[in-house]
Image: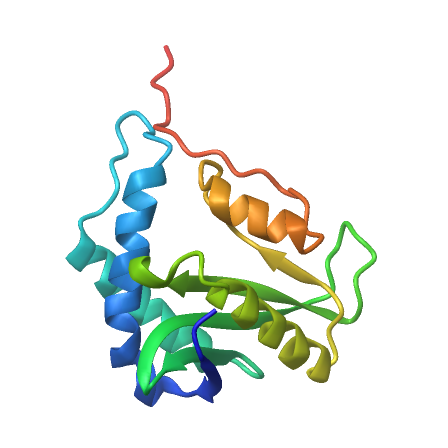
Length: 167
């Protein structure tokens, strides 16, 4: 693994996420499940929506952003928010949600995602949560393998499609 420093960051670092998020978009395009009639957004529209959500999420109580940097250059990030207790499973008073974990293409496979995830665990536990939910594209096999190695299992399966016209 590269010599990486993981730092907690604020909204002032959102511009640093853009190239990493665009790299994530390209990765998602490669593993896209190809839903009929609902193509992926283009990269610019995706960044506009995603960056707006990041601003909103980071305004939430206890939400945090971690940046993985090598020689001051951001290579990856993780963004986490929190929810109240789950209604269907016996979680604690609140649980975390990993909203996004991304690593630039050229650094994927270097262990940066795992390092970010481990630092996320430290911050989540320090915030008093013991459970975390992670969303991942169903066809993103490398991410699924990472999360399963870490002990996470598919939980709620969301499906997406065009609403059929019925007589």
